Length: 181
Ligand code: S3P
Image (cartoon, rainbow, N blue to C red; front, side, top):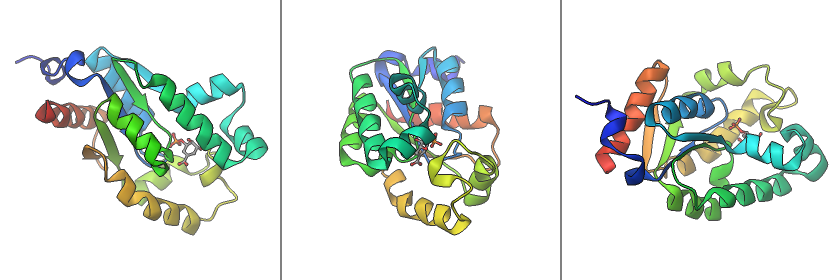
């Protein structure tokens, strides 16, 4: 039997867009999906940082969140016509309807879902995420997750990642995408 990723070719799926809250594992899973699918991996936040020449905390501090969201939409838009990409988005990409239009044009949108304890363990102590930094209380971050939950669930495919290995998550994503081909 061929590997699952080989059943669904890049030309069938164009791109894969990963969404999910901070700490959901979008970059880690994205790297592995790209490797197994012989696709190119793009981290949207990294692209924004490269284009801006500034870190995300600096962009938030100097320009504010709304302007960061503009950069995010512009950067996503710059990828919209590309093919063969696995794109890891930032956790707030789901906030703008325009981003959904762009993401859906690109390919299947996959929500990597994780329970709060899993997310908390992954983002605790992190200083690179202004919306989950040390100045934010746990209640504030959980409230943000709750507000976003129904938006994430608009994805084409939801994969639960709690208590799964990276290989299991990657396999489940491929399986879900293949079922949609
Ligand atoms: C954000 C998530 C971050 C980054 C920015 C805002 C959010 O990306 O885009 O700090 O609003 O959830 P990750 O989800 O990769 O941490």
